[in-house]
Image 1 (cartoon, rainbow, N blue to C red):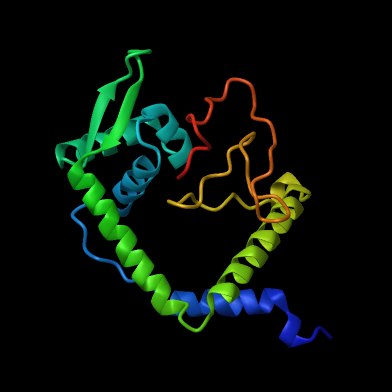
Image 2 (image 1 turned 90 degrees about the horizontal axis):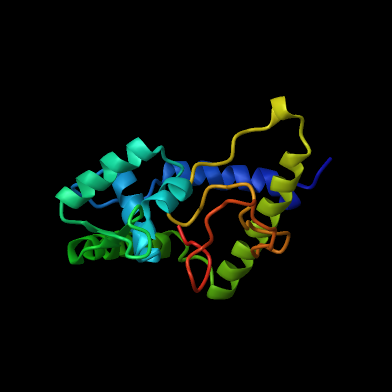
Length: 196
């Protein structure tokens, strides 16, 4: 019988249950969570194109168009035409949008500090490293499953990009591996990978 003190899966389930019982604190913002995700993505990628947002937020163009229209009408973003390719729209945050993102990050940081106050900084780093390593290992195990047994990938989030075939994803050490992108995929913006 497995020692319960070293049962990683059981410990993970207990942590997940505790997190459900202690949901994140949220401020009331005048826009839905999906708009918040869009704003955070735009904040990390100034001048991102609408096509890139579709891909990395895993949205249909029509759905993204509605979200952009609402965010623009609320004064949260600006849209400009790319000078090199006039078919491309570039999305940037307005001052109001940047303020909203800062407020969301402050709420999230305070919530995280409160819930991880029992850990030292070194313990936090080690915990994240182990979680990334385990996640990458389980992702590889999932790829070995028959198609009918595979679960869909988790939904994307501000710091959890969707798994797009051909794009870098965590390797066994929790760092991005360098798998080549499929031909035809848009490149990441200059200076690094797309952050979302």
